[in-house]
Length: 340
Image 1 (tube, rainbow, N blue to C red):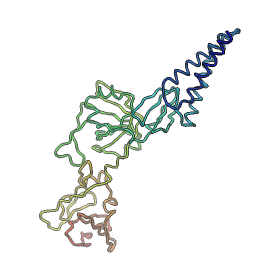
Image 2 (spheres, rainbow, N blue to C red):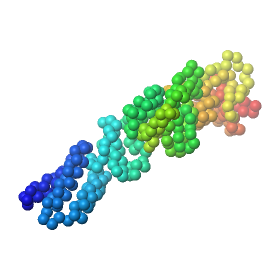
Image 3 (cartoon, rainbow, N blue to C red):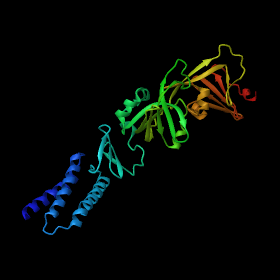
């Protein structure tokens, strides 16, 4: 009996200790720990003096001790955890779920999320992109496929709900898709829970790329929901090409364009972004571009407080009064326009 107890003790200790030295994730490490704790309890149960109190609480104490040790060695030494279940997104991103915490494995780096409060913690470029039209074409199937997975979705903002939610819908690009306009399909939608600080940066029809956990599906409303989200900075509206429509007949009179902006011998100015075409007037109102952005690479000349900017396709006369005149490139400088 004594020899058998010693063998059981040695096996139980090996089953408990060895998993802590295996630096790969496998469910067998958890199985090994569980068996080791059971055998360790059996070792005491086979003793001559059996302490019932000890037999009941010893496994609990061992569980707490090994659970804490597993947390600390992963947190401090960046070693593979044991008391978790893996949700493998791809070869670079895995999510380990435990009882009181979650771990993001981001390209071999572990990031702890205690109490499941953190938004997606890895770099967004580690995930493949899903187009919103693909995701919402069959929302029930999409939910079944990606349920409780972190996914990256790109689409257009169809609605902003309060200070914490953005809605995306399927959309169709039409012949008059100017200023980002598209036709939305009301049959299904994706609700994205975001931090309020990010909502102010987006408008209806803007492209947005977001990573989040696909949390729920409302069958009646055909509605999917993303939580723990992170918005990807895609800089889609950082670069553009300018297109100018010159007036066929120029009568040299100023025409209202938008707030404090006027045109002279120009019908319109367009900004051709990589994804959308915008009228300059709309882009200025929508704050996709500022006056400073527009003139940052131009040559300028100052006279009596007025500034004349030479751009590639047109010129701008910025008056001291705050009036800005978009001028045909072929017109000469005329600071007297500021007095009109």
